[in-house]
Length: 430
Ligand SMILES: *Cc1c(COP(=O)(O)O)cnc(C)c1O
Image (cartoon, rainbow, N blue to C red; front, side, top):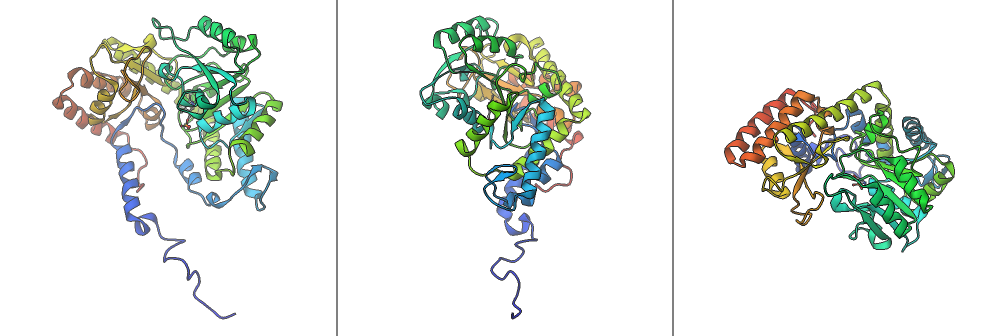
């Protein structure tokens, strides 16, 4: 065979040149995001900062491999290492949560929940879940989501006086609606969930109980929040919030028979091939969460969230439920006279990234909202302890009280100084 230049159909550097060289425009956007992360205080409760090991797994060459099905039962060949990766993720998650069966393939938390729906429900079936505006989640039967368009969703809220779930009201609703599925867990509910009580309620009508622990899965692992596994038929979580891993979802159950139904609901029910680099990074996440340092981190997340709640309450802010059992602090700003949307913009100017959030009984639409949601997971990963979180809450209060350019600018400067003392991702370009 005649010699010819190798890889002649590829552009120069295809296998060895970096992004900065090949695609400077994209590299600039990614580098901008790194700078943004480094120089602001992340208080969005859905976010965290993954380890370098997670980033390496996420950027590994297994991204090339296509597999469908489960380890040992793939449709495509060449799956030896793909199987090894997925088995590691499964075994680690099983031991981490004490689950008999785990599916690590859901591309996101919403996909995990959709798969649970596909496993147990038919279109038109009734479900009972927390109202989105009271702290539930889009994928729990919200009218604008496929879960709410295809299922008949009935929602419970919280007690208007305490901001807490009223289990008697949930039980009344469930007895009246007789749903096939009951969901507990949400995205803006700061208090611990009583899974045993929810199971009792579900059992009264023979419903399946789904616990969605996306916002406090790390606390569950560390034994700092009640454990859903002994009570819920199925548990779902995202891996990227309080579990501190990359983006994705997981489904857990203590019942191997339900596990088989869930597996076929994920594939071929709602997904095709596996995002193997994400599964590899999930394996890293579960390995990291099994280390003793993770339990210490989780304890600090809780202490820090409680410190923020305490300081804001002392400063006269209306902290929903008066405190928190999770990484979430929900602040009702109606007494301050600023909308959630405006508070978010003001705080962003001061170097704090938060999200506007509806609060129980909110009359503003969700894109304006009357509250903000704060979370302690990402800041704790950065190394902030209670002293820093007390400082953060004091400055957040200053900015929201003053609502002046001068206080915003002074705070921005102080935030940059604090961030410089707690560097993240040193030496990276993006
Ligand atoms: C974040 C979240 C999800 C889903 O997350 P995506 O990964 O964005 O689809 C599901 N349930 C709850 C309670 C959540 O907080």
